[in-house]
Amino acid sequence: MTFSNKKIERALAWLHFAWSQAHHVTELPLVIIRPMAPRPDFEAMLEVAIEQARLGLKEGGIPIGAAIFDQTGRLIGAGHNRRVQQGDPSLHGETDAFRNAGRQRGYRHLIMVTTLAPCWYCSGLVRQFGFRTVVVGESINFQGGIEWLRSFGVDVVDLRSSTCISLLADYIRANPSIWNEDIGQE
Image (cartoon, rainbow, N blue to C red; front, side, top):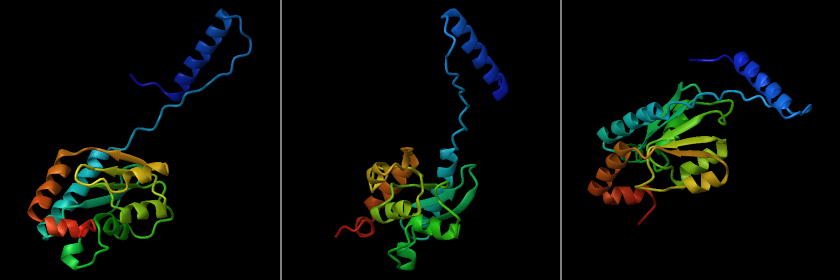
């Protein structure tokens, strides 16, 4: 059963009246509770990033994908880690998605979705451009800067995806030197 906002407001007003009469209170502030907007489908958004990660793996690269969405779930840009493929140390999944999203008037209303917790470099991008929500597929293989982002009020949602965890763990086992290079370990 669904209720319109008007019906909810009338019901709350009636409850307010009944309570105030029963307790002989003439002045009681009326609080109106508005229904919250539904949470975006983060799992569906993550699927786009996972497909990007798989594409990167097929190209011979590190399987990390990212995508940027608006609040309605509309895809703005997607990308994947291309460090190995293009020999460019700055081409992380998040930066590729950011570049593919093109110029935006603002980023606070956009959602960054990535298969792995963002590294310090990508966490800096999130802070610099003011993303308020970051969805990560996993933070088991790499914690990155998620606690730092949270300390600035960024809503970091860790979905703990078994697909993301195994995809990267398998890659790390097979390619430890490339992985260490990617995270800046010698």
